[in-house]
Amino acid sequence: MHHCWLSVLSILFPGPLSGLAMSLTPRWGDMRTKHMWAAVPEHWESMGHPSDGAMIDLRIALKPDRENALVDTLYEVSSPQHQRHLLLHCRYGTHLSKEQVADLVAPHQDTRKIVESWLEYHGVPPSNVSTSHGGGWLTVTGVPVSKANDLLGASYQLYRHTGTNETILRTVRYALPTALHGLVKTVAPTTFFGLPRTLRQTSRKRSRGRTALPSRRDGTDDENDEAVTPSYLRSLYKTATYRPAALDMSVLGITGFHDQYPGAEDLTLFMTLHRSDAVDPDPTFTVIGVNGGGYDPEDPDHEANLDMQYAQGMAWPIRHIFYSIGGLPDSDSFIPDSNQPENSNEPFLEWLEYIINQDDIPQTITTSYGGDEQTFPLDYAQSVCELFAQLGVRGVSVIFASGDLGVGGGDCKKNDGSGTVEFLPIFPPTCPYVTSVGSTRDIPEVAADFSSGGFSNYFKLPPYQTDAVPPFLQQLGDQYTGLYNASSRGFPDISAQGVDFEIVLGGELEDEIFGTSGSAPIVAGIISMLSDYRLATNRPPLGFLNPWLYGRALRLQGINDITSGSNPGCDTDGFSAVDGWDPVTGLGTLDFEALLHIVAAN
Image (cartoon, rainbow, N blue to C red; front, side, top):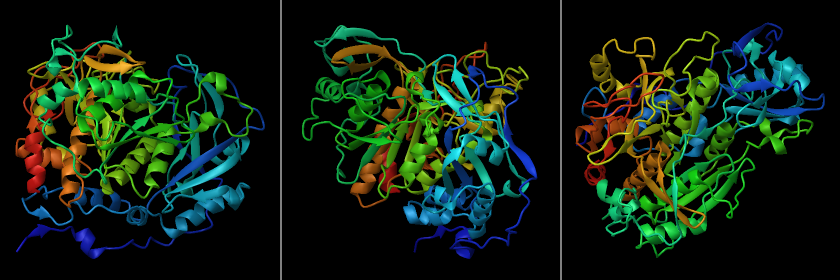
């Protein structure tokens, strides 16, 4: 007889809970600030108000009827064992369908009515309001900017980024009627000025021409004995003997922003050099455009090629999908008088809205884009993070590069106008429902000095870190007191090689590429193969990884601890890699063979 643990919540409340009765006749004039910046965020300057005819689409996130049900369910289906004892969790691996998740996060039936009555009060016709699957988000199309200002107590202006010239339509403050504060999580676009950037800060490269051979780490006599290649990584992380078998089910997704695309011909040449066995089927990928995202095979990019070539190099022949996510036009294509300014879109929301509404989604998704956590309004970051939790509860392993700025880049000043210096964590890697990946280098592996890591200022310490993080903090003592939040989510979770990658770009080999955005697809490839094994043996994929990583994987020695190196920044030496978890390399790097034995026994 098998004994397992089942939460009281799932026994007592198997279905949606009825909300309390709500008044449908609140006062709309009683406004209270939802979010505001003390000043225009750094690197942005106002270009003035848009024309009278400018329009904007608004997205309104509604609070669910059962506020904690999503996260409670996520941990139940993602934790092989209950944290307080060794009983198997009855719900482990019982991931939810799209429809079940929609029911789980659905708002109370009166919530939408109240919000729609507010919109109607301001003259927004019902035909302009649509609802996401499950009702968690309302999209309001064709809103004149003047009306958006009235709705939100805002002052929308055009802002230009002084570094990139990208132009966006935003406000430094918005408000909601007091009656809506308990019903609405966030409204977008409003005060989110940050634009997703590649988390690879820079790329050092040396072009060596189309005729170059694989590096000596591949077992050749090539002059370049420093390049990190798939063959080297497959040997280091012990994946070389595994051949994916669930090819009709296994899918690995890669996201791309900024019109950055992988090159198909570059992938073929890269795989010819570094995965000579990759011939049947030929390595390829599917491109899916989201929010107007395109694809130009003649214009491959460093970032997209790095992601695709190393994900494929690790996980071939698993099927790969590249999601090209639009919504960030350059200044030359921005027309402020257009009825629907493209630059009013929120790319993370557009991407998540798309993928959550698909019936079939990849078991593993890797992303190498993000930004300083403080540039994301708290309500926006929380809403995006909860959407990642929705992917996790459906069985998706969501992987993010941790960033390449150590404990912080630039002047490390808070953006609240105070001028206070503090370490700058990166979002979405700080979201507790994603797996954040830092970088190592060399053999034996040590921490890469650019590897971003630290502690969130938005998200509290998650339950899976309650045993892992305190020992590090105790060892750290009072060093850096006041520069970080000692009671919050620590990142990264794990790490992988991140220095001296070799890629093919435009038909030529380039080496000395570095960054956590190379580490993340390596980890994604490893995790994708572990989930492939589970699928091939009629079991569910791994899904949200962190409870498993901090529990069984760590306890059963499936992770290699990294104990040397640091991540300087903000004019400090940064944090140090130590025994156990640390905010440089996380728990360490993955041992595929050991992890395969663990997932086989689960």
